[in-house]
Length: 527
Image (cartoon, rainbow, N blue to C red; front, side, top):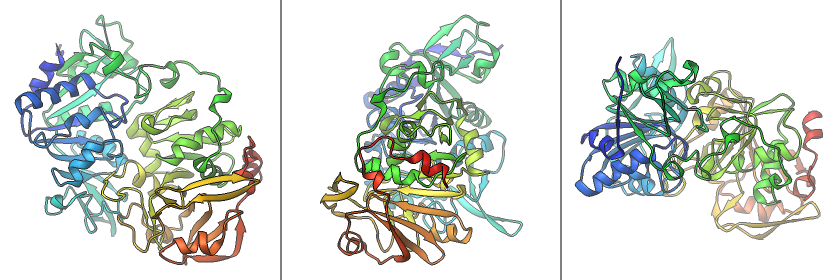
């Protein structure tokens, strides 16, 4: 029976040839194969090889330092095709300075593209991406100037009179994956990983193109000792295995800790009072956004403000039994972590494969999705993917907002220096932000307001001082915070004048109070 070779990180790095295309599987620092990635970087810095590489990845895979940041060297990379770079400053710098070709593919389409590639299909066919910067008639997902004249990796096809995006196959030479236990035959499990990800789909895509699979593992066990249902990748599909010599450093479950059984579902832990968030601008925005929920809603939480506050607020308000929280990484229920640990949760009741999760988001569509945002224009177009010179990329933003029944964007009204305080149920602006977010034209279309209105999708844009709703006539101001002046603290800080509702309301003063709970349970149940 075919089985892989057990090699060192250095020996694995030596397998990779110049001009290769490499897929790495992970999300944030979850499942990052640090032993292998560090060895590949070390070899390049010492010898100049491997060079002229194409790096392929569906998710952002870094904690601002590790992960695929190890590839962020001029000369090492020729091209990157990825989903998100928000936690990869050196990679964003290479892209912004036109040092590498850079393409963005929405995260869910990327995860599922591996499945299409594995089956020999002509690509991933979907409506996700139409009308956004991924559409080849707009930017084609090209993230910098030098990529503009490079070949397209997406196109638009017409089937039965309707337009669809086609994400083209990407031939792979190598796929780097990570697991927990590996037996002597190379059979690999992912027991302690905080996400299931799209490991097997990517392995099969690599094999379809004759590529090699290199796996990093934490524990080696006797052949035949692993239960067959625990095996994520059979050893016959793995070419080389690297046993991590320092799991505390190079095989961490996530950025913040080496291993916590609550985040892979091995145990459930009690929720303590320390999980209650302090009252601040982000919590205020999250509180108002959650007032859009109904009993039995299934919601998705995106990066930024939503992931940092939505889960904790739901927990402290005691509405966890009324709604179901999901995250694109495959999480159902529990309390998600935020920041550099986005995508994991403790006490979740289900954890699906990454690519399977997007079958739900791309198909039936989640009831409500909460997303961060950077800019919005009069037509309801939203930019959340390129803020200033930084090309953060789409992540799962485009996938999820395309088919969600209700999209709620969460953003501060202005940026760069905004300082607020709260007293007696009123909002006080101590210092105004210098960055205007309500602009005449967004820098990049991540969410297409025209398409959203055409299909009658419900959309709200929630800030700490104002709430807007996207209606057929455009962006409509529906609520303002108590203590805020409409003219000087809202309209004068917008590049355009929104439609103002004839029934303009005051935001619920309870959201500006220190009180916990603030009444979300009654609000949800009385909808």
